[in-house]
Length: 339
Image 1 (tube, helix red, strand yellow):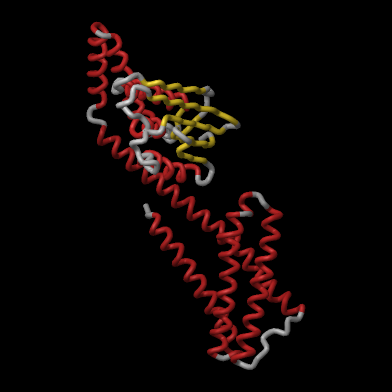
Image 2 (image 1 turned 180 degrees about the horizontal axis):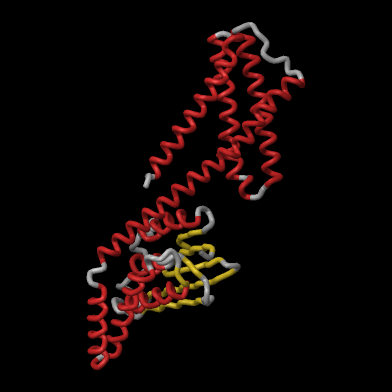
């Protein structure tokens, strides 16, 4: 699989070759009538202003305005941008060739405005194709990165699966032995077994039922409670549809972040609230806890940083991830569509 750096390098090379070909065609066409120097100057001028239109529309206006459905605003901005570039092209050629070569390239007649505008208009159309190709390469790169991430995850998982059947059978035996002596201990062993089965069976999948993720979170919380010196005041509100799917291990980084960075084990009171809602086929998961003053404000853990990278690969721009300090509380949330 090609790396992201390779994709970018190939894309830049294709653009460079395209502009060289375009320059060469213009140069050869103008050489017999203008001579070597003037043909080079005018060809460079055309390439420059056409590049301004292509990249201005393809990289700036289309993704920032047009793709967001703001069509009227896009039309007005494109018309203004297009008119300005055409005027600058004609004005610069008029000035350069008039001052240095004693020629008037333009008399600014309607016919010349129309010809220049028509040629530049073709570049506007081309910029849509350019934007589409950028989107294609971006999606291809994201797909390859997801495949690579999935491959490495599976490889790591396989390395960790040291005789899983033996491990589960042993846990079952320990569970039955513990159940006779200490039912509470047996319950924690059962939770641990469920979490390990989740890692082996659910986490390699592309998407799972939300209920599976929530069950994993609840088991994780109960096992973390065992490590607390003082009782943890934690509330978890949720309503789960039967058939709502998400990628596995999307929500757990928030919970891990709470236990790693949001709890002060020296204090007798640690309050955590979590809320999960489904609205219009979008999931919102919010976590709030008292800010641990011993943790720097800009340190929220690598889990959330890695989660943002994963969300970018999965959803592009169609997600919201926030983490901030509000007064005495640390607040984190995520909003994603159904997978």
